Length: 233
Image (cartoon, rainbow, N blue to C red):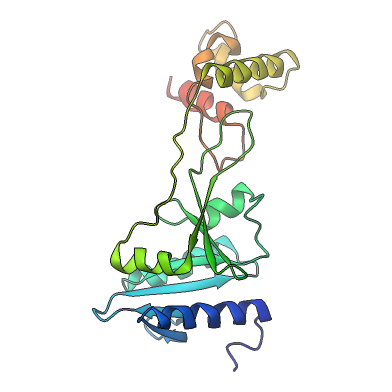
């Protein structure tokens, strides 16, 4: 009880629902399991008959990046896979880049748990084109399929989306870049490096807009790419 007294009702119900669904599939599920070696506890530990285990953390409240990394490192140190399910306090319809890259796993996926539909919402394709909104691809899979995928490697039948850069996108990026130059929105540090290396001006390098899909940056994507190239030069 002491573990759960500060948790929300949504958190508690979600853990119980996941536990019951997992056990119906024939797996063992332990709530609030303490892991003495790392002085942590998992919301849920799921294991199969072969001893393979998965830790699940249901995150509804805020958590700092250092604390999140500390917990992940703890699980890693004992060879335990962990997946963070984000609750309804974290929006999957309009996720911030900070939240997405904070919780992205090693396969660059982010997971939400929809308690009403008992589905796992998976965000993939975490890219952002220059001058476009950050819009990851969203997949919905049944919880049963998700668990079977982890333990039995059964396909989730996800629809993947190929990242395409066409001429229309390139023209939009080029026009937006030209507008930034005319309105003097280009950082002075970039201009300084451009002239330092004897380029005519910032616009002389239109290649900087091609295939720009980096996400999770605090600065504009093309600013970052051009700065790196100029610093290397």
